Length: 221
Length: 298
Image 1 (cartoon, rainbow over the protein chains, first blue to last red):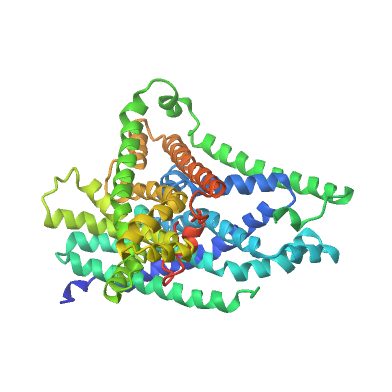
Image 2 (image 1 turned 90 degrees about the vertical axis):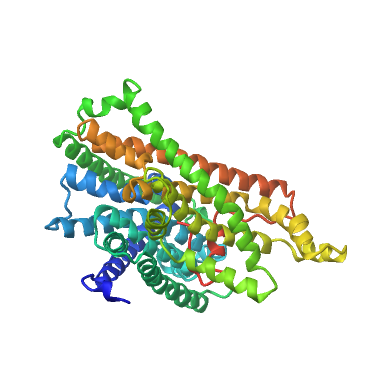
């Protein structure tokens, strides 16, 4: 029944999906947090930049961004992010596109976390003479992240699913392999079921485990 | 609380602010300068590449407008089909019979856990193999199928959150005046829930519009993004110009939808015509965690 699987690197494709998701998750967590810090900070120019970035990027389809990294950045402007060979370049470009897009949502998730921190926390921190960056890094953000685990989990799950968009620029991840297999094998339902199952396995435990972690670390108020 | 993170600024803080502003501005200008230089070097700023969008209507009437029409058509169809489906599944998840509740929950959680692109590719092959939909229409069918399957389950969660957000007194009062279960849902709960859910439904529209672009990139569906590709082929590799125009259109369309959603939300919160419950743009995402957490409305 599963003979047709021979010759296809199913695990390899899902491993690429996982790599895309993890690398982009780390990147967008860093960049998204920085954006959130800019948006709540005292420098008007940075606030404006953060707001503009989030509002612009949120409203562009991820597909446009990913396709642009390949057609625009790589093929037109020859930006290759220091990689050799089309395959490696496309992988890095896909990660870049995913980071650019996802960080807008990370920023909003972190900001929603910041909003749950009681005003008194920041006031107390200011009262003992901490500067803005100290208030943010030492007092507010540690508490904000604990209540942002839920929204951030949603972003991570959406990111995992969004990695399939990288198929549009030929990164050999799960959706790319699925398309190839469906074209070559007469096993539509079985192939689709396998890939659907693969994504359920990736996203469902993430939601359950991080949901549990989120409850565990949330600040009880 | 954002403004409470820092004190009113004294002379030193003001000086530091100016310093930060200048440093950030320099970095921003350097980035823009680099973008400008690279574009210029590769000849992407040459007027002939941008001209089609500013002079004459050919680019708009031949490529952009038909693409935009297809984007809007697919998005509208998907929304119109997904909304009733979502309502049915959302209500089914609240049923007191386990044999309705459990299958409905399984279907909803399953389709929320799977990428839209996978559903679209599946739909495309399904229509090719088991139906005689003409191959020209197949991409549209596939895109709408994928969007409906995914968004119906997201909308089901929104509907569920909307109904659960109503005060308990509503259903108790309905029961007290002797309404049947379906009357209670149809006459009392749903009308109020729909009003409360409107902002979340409108912002789901943004997600649908964005996802139609997948059809253009992977399934040869001739929507807005695909028209950018055709254009850059036709007008001599003006990739940057075509993508800029298409991105601006997407941003304008989605920004209008987002603004409409938050206007609706503000209005509903102020009017409080219903019992005060409003499922906001953000709450829908949070509602996503209620189940097994496979979701998020990105």
